[in-house]
Length: 171
Image (tube, rainbow, N blue to C red; front, side):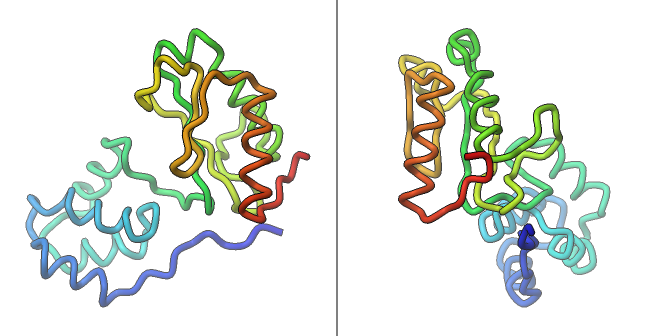
C-alpha cells in the first residue's frame, strides 16, 4: 500500500514567505520557489494560501507553475532520479534507461505515473545534466552515473536502494 506523499503544509510558514517576499504579482516566482524548495512540489494547500493572502490570482499562480518546468504539481518520491534526454544522451539510449528503471520501480510502461507505488523514487526526464561526455547519463539524488546501459542503470539503482534501505518493487 502506498503511503501518502502529500505534504503537510504549515500555514504560518507560507505567511512568513509572503511577508518576506511580497504579495504582488512580482513575487509569484519567488513564492513558488520557496514552496517547491520546502515541499519538493507545489501542494494545493500552499497555493491556495498564496491566492487567499496576496494579490496574485489563482490563474496567474497556476499559469506560472505550469509554464516553468522547474515546478511540480505532484508529490515526488524520497529520492529523485533525473534521466538526461539531451541530444547526446538521447542518441546513445536514454530511453533504455527509462525502460529499465521503470521496470525495477514497478512503474507501468506508458503510464503517466513517474513515482514508484511505495514512494521511494521518482523518475524525471530532463533536457540536460551537463555530462554529455558520459552519455547516456542519470543523476540519483546528487550522484551522477554515466556511460549507462539499461542493465548498468538498474545496477546503480539497486546499489542506491540498498544503501538507503529502500525497497524496489520490480526486483
